[in-house]
Image (cartoon, rainbow, N blue to C red; front, side):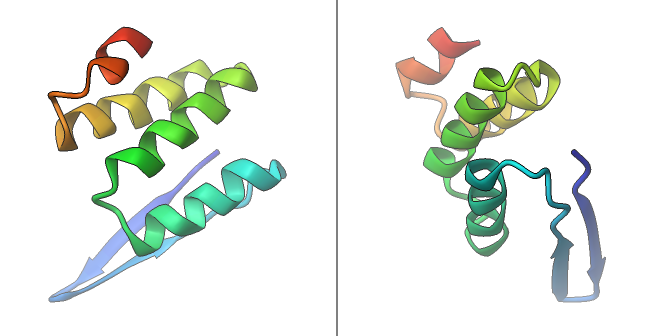
Length: 78
């Protein structure tokens, strides 16, 4: 999966690339609307992990931890 990010002055946009997994794609769309949601990143990390896409799972869980470093689940997941 590839997510491309670009920004033009104060108008950030995010292109969402479909993975073919309905859950991951739905979470990606929600994350595009709420990029600072630790819960959404953690949910997508779990979905990636279940699909065996470990590198993306780690990236998402690291993002969730950066947003909410006090959540013990995030630390345990990694």
